[in-house]
Image (cartoon, rainbow, N blue to C red; front, side, top):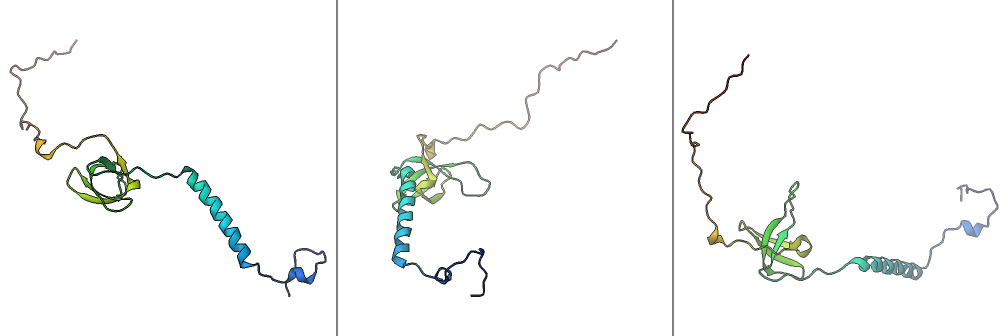
Length: 137
Protein backbone atom coordinates (compact mmCIF):
# COMPACT_ATOMS: atom_id res chain seq x y z
CA UNK A 1 0.00 0.00 0.00
CA UNK A 2 1.17 3.46 -0.77
CA UNK A 3 -0.69 5.21 2.01
CA UNK A 4 1.37 6.45 4.90
CA UNK A 5 0.07 5.52 8.37
CA UNK A 6 -0.46 8.16 11.05
CA UNK A 7 2.08 6.67 13.36
CA UNK A 8 5.77 6.20 12.95
CA UNK A 9 5.76 3.15 15.22
CA UNK A 10 6.52 -0.11 13.50
CA UNK A 11 3.38 -2.21 12.75
CA UNK A 12 2.89 -5.67 11.36
CA UNK A 13 1.66 -5.94 7.81
CA UNK A 14 -1.36 -8.05 8.83
CA UNK A 15 -2.80 -5.12 10.81
CA UNK A 16 -2.70 -2.97 7.69
CA UNK A 17 -4.60 -5.52 5.58
CA UNK A 18 -8.35 -4.80 5.08
CA UNK A 19 -10.61 -7.43 6.63
CA UNK A 20 -14.33 -8.15 6.79
CA UNK A 21 -16.20 -8.95 9.96
CA UNK A 22 -18.51 -11.92 10.14
CA UNK A 23 -22.00 -10.91 9.06
CA UNK A 24 -23.65 -13.06 11.74
CA UNK A 25 -21.77 -11.18 14.46
CA UNK A 26 -22.83 -7.83 12.95
CA UNK A 27 -26.48 -8.96 12.75
CA UNK A 28 -26.42 -9.93 16.43
CA UNK A 29 -25.04 -6.52 17.39
CA UNK A 30 -27.73 -4.81 15.28
CA UNK A 31 -30.50 -6.90 16.91
CA UNK A 32 -29.19 -6.00 20.38
CA UNK A 33 -29.19 -2.29 19.53
CA UNK A 34 -32.74 -2.53 18.12
CA UNK A 35 -33.98 -4.36 21.23
CA UNK A 36 -32.49 -1.67 23.45
CA UNK A 37 -34.11 1.09 21.36
CA UNK A 38 -37.48 -0.71 21.46
CA UNK A 39 -37.28 -1.09 25.25
CA UNK A 40 -36.66 2.65 25.74
CA UNK A 41 -39.39 3.64 23.26
CA UNK A 42 -41.99 1.26 24.70
CA UNK A 43 -41.37 2.39 28.27
CA UNK A 44 -43.38 5.60 27.59
CA UNK A 45 -45.53 4.53 24.62
CA UNK A 46 -49.18 3.59 25.20
CA UNK A 47 -52.28 2.88 23.15
CA UNK A 48 -54.94 5.58 22.99
CA UNK A 49 -58.43 4.59 24.16
CA UNK A 50 -60.89 3.60 21.44
CA UNK A 51 -63.57 6.10 20.37
CA UNK A 52 -67.21 5.09 19.95
CA UNK A 53 -69.74 6.34 17.41
CA UNK A 54 -71.32 9.57 18.60
CA UNK A 55 -68.37 10.60 20.81
CA UNK A 56 -67.68 14.34 20.82
CA UNK A 57 -64.13 15.38 20.05
CA UNK A 58 -61.77 17.98 18.64
CA UNK A 59 -59.80 17.60 15.38
CA UNK A 60 -56.20 18.77 15.14
CA UNK A 61 -55.82 21.59 12.58
CA UNK A 62 -53.89 20.59 9.44
CA UNK A 63 -53.75 23.88 7.53
CA UNK A 64 -50.63 25.98 7.93
CA UNK A 65 -51.13 28.82 10.37
CA UNK A 66 -54.41 27.41 11.68
CA UNK A 67 -54.33 26.91 15.44
CA UNK A 68 -57.95 26.29 16.43
CA UNK A 69 -59.05 22.67 16.89
CA UNK A 70 -62.42 21.98 15.19
CA UNK A 71 -65.33 20.36 17.03
CA UNK A 72 -66.69 17.12 15.64
CA UNK A 73 -68.51 13.85 16.24
CA UNK A 74 -67.36 10.30 15.45
CA UNK A 75 -69.46 8.90 12.58
CA UNK A 76 -67.75 5.50 12.35
CA UNK A 77 -64.51 3.64 12.95
CA UNK A 78 -62.84 2.84 9.62
CA UNK A 79 -59.65 1.05 10.67
CA UNK A 80 -57.76 0.18 13.81
CA UNK A 81 -56.69 3.81 14.31
CA UNK A 82 -58.74 5.63 11.66
CA UNK A 83 -62.09 7.36 12.19
CA UNK A 84 -64.61 9.24 10.06
CA UNK A 85 -65.48 12.54 11.73
CA UNK A 86 -68.27 15.02 10.98
CA UNK A 87 -67.78 18.63 12.09
CA UNK A 88 -70.40 21.15 13.17
CA UNK A 89 -70.38 22.78 9.73
CA UNK A 90 -71.24 19.45 8.07
CA UNK A 91 -67.78 18.63 6.68
CA UNK A 92 -66.60 15.03 6.85
CA UNK A 93 -62.98 14.06 7.59
CA UNK A 94 -60.96 10.85 7.95
CA UNK A 95 -58.42 11.20 10.76
CA UNK A 96 -55.93 9.06 12.67
CA UNK A 97 -56.68 8.55 16.37
CA UNK A 98 -53.50 10.46 17.30
CA UNK A 99 -55.02 13.66 15.82
CA UNK A 100 -58.29 13.44 17.81
CA UNK A 101 -59.00 14.49 21.40
CA UNK A 102 -62.18 13.36 23.12
CA UNK A 103 -64.18 16.11 24.85
CA UNK A 104 -67.33 16.27 26.96
CA UNK A 105 -69.17 19.08 25.15
CA UNK A 106 -72.35 18.41 23.15
CA UNK A 107 -72.97 19.72 19.63
CA UNK A 108 -76.23 21.68 19.46
CA UNK A 109 -78.92 19.95 17.37
CA UNK A 110 -79.36 21.54 13.95
CA UNK A 111 -83.08 22.32 14.39
CA UNK A 112 -82.51 24.26 17.64
CA UNK A 113 -80.23 26.78 15.99
CA UNK A 114 -81.94 30.16 15.90
CA UNK A 115 -81.18 33.27 13.95
CA UNK A 116 -79.66 36.07 16.01
CA UNK A 117 -81.97 39.06 16.46
CA UNK A 118 -81.59 41.63 13.71
CA UNK A 119 -80.34 45.02 14.76
CA UNK A 120 -81.97 48.09 13.27
CA UNK A 121 -79.80 49.91 10.77
CA UNK A 122 -80.12 53.29 12.47
CA UNK A 123 -79.64 53.74 16.20
CA UNK A 124 -82.43 55.20 18.32
CA UNK A 125 -82.28 58.98 18.46
CA UNK A 126 -82.39 60.57 21.89
CA UNK A 127 -85.59 62.44 22.78
CA UNK A 128 -83.82 65.49 24.17
CA UNK A 129 -80.62 67.00 22.85
CA UNK A 130 -77.72 66.79 25.22
CA UNK A 131 -76.53 70.04 26.79
CA UNK A 132 -72.92 71.07 26.71
CA UNK A 133 -71.13 73.33 29.09
CA UNK A 134 -68.91 75.99 27.70
CA UNK A 135 -65.52 76.24 29.14
CA UNK A 136 -64.25 79.73 29.38
CA UNK A 137 -62.58 82.27 31.49
